Every structure is written in structure tokens, then in C-alpha cells.
Image 1 (cartoon, rainbow, N blue to C red):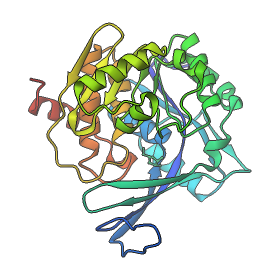
Image 2 (image 1 turned 120 degrees about the vertical axis):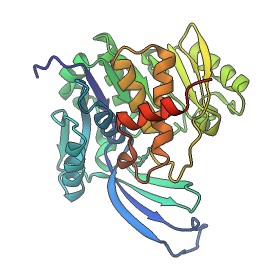
Image 3 (image 1 turned 180 degrees about the vertical axis):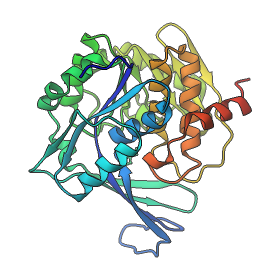
Image 4 (image 1 turned 30 degrees about the vertical axis):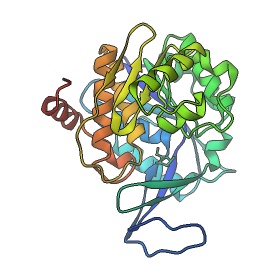
Length: 318
Ligand code: RIB
């Protein structure tokens, strides 16, 4: 795998998203008429890879994805879409015994969503996938991890990557019902919880910057090296282990929040792989997440670097 380009590797889930739009989401036991539907690339691992791939176009940074798909038509679709984003799929494995993961997504008129994920091949990811991707994990400048594959595999990937000097970013999404594995905390360079994940991991709701700072302190005390609390429309609180700050939200009109967190993490990885200082990387990540909410879809909502640069120029940090 000889390649001199700096590498961002996403190790995680691949889904096909079956998305229905309706004026409002159905209540339990209810059927509502929808307006449109789409069958598109999703999954937190592949969204982060695809978004990084789109940002990195022409930048000299390579983006790759490790994980598992089934040998089915959704697997073929996922491959084709990821290739469109310029993602190197050499570390991706196929599993003849499992179906490609899917997500059933409902989106209402205000852009709010609810998601049911059926993990399929993603839930079979284990240490053999880490071994198969070991050269990639060892060569990466930044490794993006999420929690749609089993935590044991996430832990093994984080260990391998960090031992080789990579920066490990964990998006603790979906919110882990039973918390993180004890051993995982110290293998994380940057943890990026959103509001509900912060509550799940700390018991604190980051409704204010002060609350987010308290939550970040609790997370740092568990062993992570840096924390970004994604506070939605309230911006981002960050602590790099030494310094901390608050990045104000961008003013945008959201239409669909699916994968905004994935695009945020892709932007963070892209900035850090280029050696940007932490506060600037946070700002770039925020711009990527904000722009993703102005577009429909998951991976498809990922912004190009030109759009990110334009938003940052139009709305500079005060
Ligand atoms: O983060 C958004 C993603 O979550 C969707 O694309 C869906 O696949 C679920 O995994």
C-alpha cells in the first residue's frame, strides 16, 4: 500500500439509508402519508469517509474506509457511491453471511428525524477487520471511529492506530446505552459527543457553555485527551486538554440534520490532517456540520471545501 499522501481512515459502519419525508413523523401505531423517499448511502463510518473524501478532493489528502458490507445489491450500491466521493475502499471487507446494514429514516417538515438502524454486516465487525486494516490504521494521520460497530472492534482499532501515532477521533454515536468500555477512554484523542451523547456519558445536559465545560471536564477525567461538545444551535464547546473555548454557531437555515455530526467529524479530520491549530479545526468542523444541515441526505449532504471556506469568510468568528 505505498502512498506518500497523508491519510484519513474511517473505521466503522456502512449503511444504505431508506429515507421517507412526511409533513410529520408517525406516532406509534399510526400511518401517515409521505411526500418522497430516497435510497442512498449512509452509515456513520461511510458518511464520515465520504464527507472527508469530498473535502479532500484535490488537496493531496487520501481518504479510506474500513468496515464490512454484505454481498448484496445494497453493498454494491454503497461501493459505487463511496467511489464517487473518492474514498479508497481497499480496506473494506465483504461478508457473504451478512446483509449490508440499513437505516430506516423518517424526516418531518421541520427537518427533524428519527432513525432505526439494522446493523447487519456492521455488527459482525471484529478484531479480524482490525487485523485486515492494520497497515491502514498504522499509516493514518487521523482515524475516525464511531459506535455503529461493536465497541471491542473500536477499541482494537483505536489501540492499533494510536500505537502507530495516529490521532484517534471517536464520535460516541449512537449514544452508548451502557457507556463506553473502560479501556476505550484512554485510547481516544478527541471525543465529539452531541447533546444527547454528552448526557448519556456524563449525566449532564450541555444547555449552556458552563454546563458543557463541566461535562467536558468529566470526560477529560475519564482519560480522553480532548473533547468537543456539539451543542447544536448553541455552537461547540471545546477543550484540547490545556485550553478551552466556545465556537459560536453559524447562522443557517436547516432543512435536514441527518449526518450533520458525521460531516462535522470529517471536517475536523480534514483540518487536523492538514496540521491546522485546534480552534481553527473546530471552526472548520462546525462549518461542515452547519452546511450539511442545509442539504438533504446523509453522505450526499457533505459540503465541498469551497462552500466551507465561503461560509467561514461570510461569518467570521467574532
Ligand atoms: O449519522 C447519520 C447516519 O446514522 C445515517 O446515515 C444512518 O445510516 C445512521 O447510521
